[in-house]
Image (tube, rainbow, N blue to C red; front, side):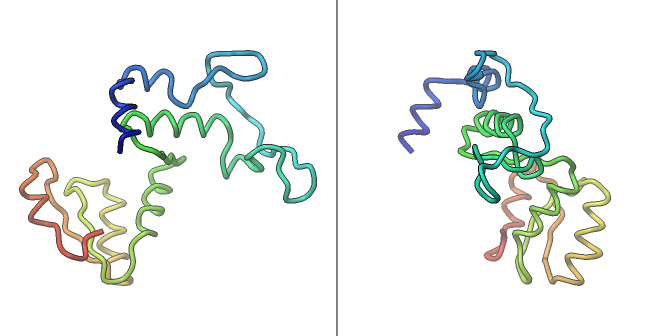
Length: 148
């Protein structure tokens, strides 16, 4: 917690948006993160990567910089980004199990609403309350012991 408080007092949203996850590039010193277009990264031998990246679908330096920057805007430790809303939604729903309860904003994207009500509820027994989350009291009332 002390680390978080120190970071909060030393930085702010504007600073983080410009600088977090974006140190000067080590080879040439560019201050903007280079866009890495490579799909595959070198390996010294099969399964032994030369850096922390092997295939862009699993991550690359540009993506890492973006995730670190976004996480810093909420003073988070980690951030995750997706190429589509469907990818983000699928990942979130993979974290719940049968008999869990979730709360969803009542004006969620129609495809997400259908996924919850036509697939998750009947096929996987995931309970969901659609609520107006702009009203904190409505949100609080929707919380159950099994809410995830």
